[in-house]
Image (tube, rainbow, N blue to C red):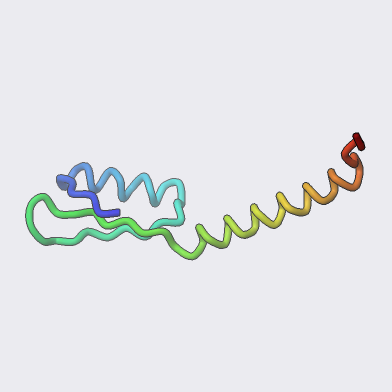
Length: 72
């Protein structure tokens, strides 16, 4: 995502991302006015999504074994 922001707003976003440890890279492209904050997902985002999907599939299998669907 590219987000044109003034200096104070860019600084605020940078600090919030770092504070909560979001898996997002953030850099400032110093071209034009205002400068542009460039955000990109890191590999950690996709790793977390794969892990969550795997847990959900495991849980679903367990539930289906414990509570089979009624026939009819």
